[in-house]
Image (cartoon, rainbow, N blue to C red):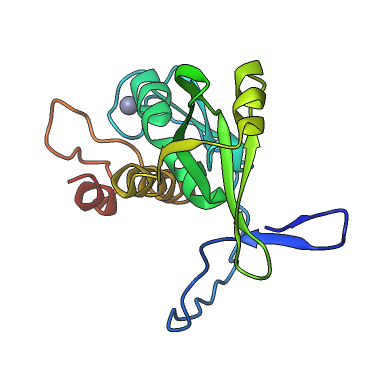
Length: 191
Ligand SMILES: [Zn+2]
């Protein structure tokens, strides 16, 4: 991703792959079609919510249905860090300034760099105090980077969903050992 400035300069991602990072070749095999199971393909509970694969913010479409805890609760816990990681955003940013007491949430902040390598923070906040803080000339930015554990879970969750939808794997009955009609691949996959 790059952002063009009026002077035809571009801001690029501030963190780039190192020179020793290997190239990865990706081959598109076939488009996947939506596949809905009788119950949540992860845990076997009633599948009550539409699940976007990958997450909707990343352009995902409704590919299957899953239970609410898996989709809503787990999704809202891990997906923001995946999106921050992919978009090179600052996670949970707050701003302090000598003129104002306390800190203000900055909403979304993208981390970019000029072609000369000068770091640039693109701030998207409608809070009126933030504008005052940015004009004050003295700022303290409190922020973190995306949590690797969380975005790894989010990425793994998307991969798991794609495999299940592609293969049409049925969930195991939670009360029993692998059922007779469960594909053998699913048994090992679910462990
Ligand atoms: Zn579930």
